[in-house]
Image 1 (cartoon, rainbow, N blue to C red):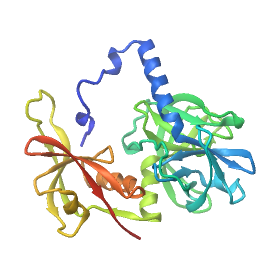
Image 2 (tube, rainbow, N blue to C red; image 1 turned 120 degrees about the vertical axis):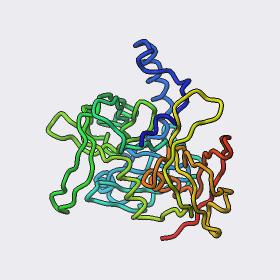
Image 3 (cartoon, rainbow, N blue to C red; image 1 turned 90 degrees about the horizontal axis):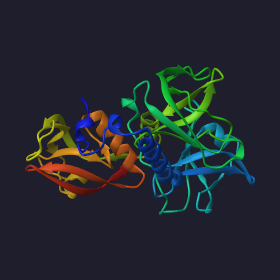
Length: 307
């Protein structure tokens, strides 16, 4: 079920923008997201990049970047702050690692839904190639598929693009035109194409490797019209059951509410709901956007966490 209809129709369409306007919009977007990209350092030298996954101190990077730090990585932020990190979890097969620092005011990036990517979409890579901090390269999605690990024998989704990567880009974000993280840059394939781990794969891994969020609702996909708006119906999930002892009940969700987003991630079915909940688990809370009696409302849910 498509989710583009959730976006405001007043947003400018790309085909109506001049090249200069597109260029300025891209530059503004990249300036906004760049503080969410850190340098992962080892013994004072750069080893790779990392993504501020949430403001509470979680940082996503590649497993091979963490291995390259000798087990004691530091992260350096764009504002000059430096933190010692703790390794929370790692997955060599997916080439992912989750670090944690003692901070609660970090400029976290928005995690996009990579399962909806299409070949030909514009993407950007941010990182620190050859020790040059904050370098941006651009390209398009060249292919989407599955790759099988030589040692593990397991297969996983991957994103292939023609963005330019070099040592120091590993662990940094692949960003879509909306400024959302859709992948974690991992390696160069075939000499000229780059491979990234999709954000939805990283979210699924976090949900299994760490703590998971339980909302406590039963849902059914729906499409509804917003009163007073001349636009296509929006997609969401109808709340058809609420656990009386769960987080949804405490947040004020009710039967008949239509849930549109969790943690700024559009929700259209149980899979997208699960991915959005996984994104919010590290912070322990998330903003909900709902429609109740024809009116949009915002609620905040505090998650119960369980291993």
